[in-house]
Amino acid sequence: MNKEIKRSMNILLAGGAGYIGSHTAVELLNNGYDVVIADNYSNSDPEAIERIKKITGKDIISYEEDITDKTAVSEIFGNNKIDVVIHFAGLKAVGESVKIPVAYYRNNIDTTLTLLECMAEYGCHNIVFSSSATVYGEENDIPYVETMKKGTCSNPYGWTKSMMEQILSDASTADEELSVVLLRYFNPIGAHESGLIGEDPQGIPNNLMPYISQVAVGRRDHLTIFGNDYKTKDGTCRRDYIHIMDLAGGHVKAVEYAAEHKGTEIFNLGTGTPYSVLEIVNAFEKANGIKIKYEFGERRSGDLPEFWADSCKAEKILGWKTSRSLEDMCKDTWNWQRNNPNGYRGK
Ligand code: NAD
Ligand code: UDP
Image (tube, rainbow, N blue to C red; front, side, top):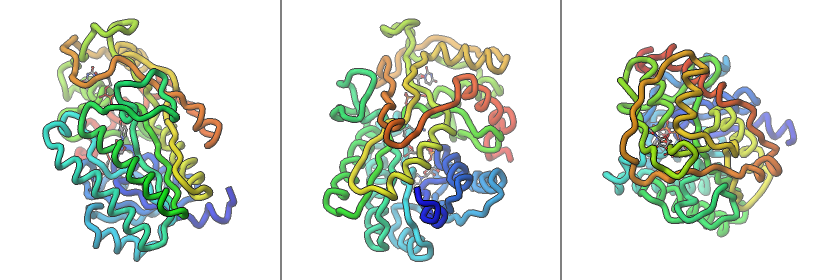
């Protein structure tokens, strides 16, 4: 990409104080981009912004705002020349989405509509969206390829992602200036190698790796493995875990791609290698020399036995490849957790 264009690009990270946004902010700043973060801290902490500044030695403009608030978002666009938006701002807990679906549809769809309206108003033509492997639904064969039809989602969270993909793609069909990049993440885990930023779930973690690391640090007694009677090699579910810094690197490539193309493009971001829950537990124990107490429990409703990515398209078109191993993922998770046993709130 043209270096002059790259240097002057200003990226708005909506929901940028969260897990994926904070790591992406570091990667963008280290690649010469400017970033503006807007977050309502509903699932994050302003301390993450301070840590990003510490890691990169760079300043960031940040706003505590709700992305569903059009007046507030419009003001952000008015005060900053935004070249590309990355839309991370969503509610993401699958189980919670079943209990409060309307709140999920309201937040996730509204943030998307508000961003699109403000982008149109201020002449910003590029958006990168945090989608998920969940949109492949239950019908598709594995590995998942971007050319597959989207499937039936098993929960409202998944449907919000599927719907937002549709909204963004329709918007780019109607506006030939608009560039939309849909990133379908697989299972991000790990933390920045500094141990200064990482995943900091509020309350009981829903996801596997933060649960394991909280058991390791003594915040939880034991891990419950949801089901050991799946038709997989050891009976536990298999997923495509990807190091958060590799995922963050995918966003830098996506921003560059968005700035130079029009229309909608979809990319899977995964490693292409699945690991079972038991393999993850064993890898964490081995990498960090810590025993993780676990027991087998019932299957979790809505879980698929196994899925992973075909990431050839991202490699071919974006020139993106993962480089970090499962051992790196486990070591970096523990480095973050042991240095921040209570997350950002224990700062
Ligand atoms: P996260 O909760 O750590 O980050 C999301 C951020 O958005 C949080 O800081 C939250 O405070 C903020 N936010 C939510 N609603 C907002 C609103 N209305 N206004 C302003 N800020 C708001 O989650 P994450 O893991 O960093 O995920 C980022 C995005 O990627 C989400 O959209 C999520 O659905 C998607 N995603 C995540 C995963 C995963 O495993 N972590 C997988 C697939 C997709
Ligand atoms: N899992 C588990 N115990 C937990 C959390 C997760 O056994 O406390 C399993 C879950 O059933 C799935 C895998 O770990 O097979 C990954 O789950 P996670 O929620 O992290 O990601 P998902 O793939 O569901 O988005």
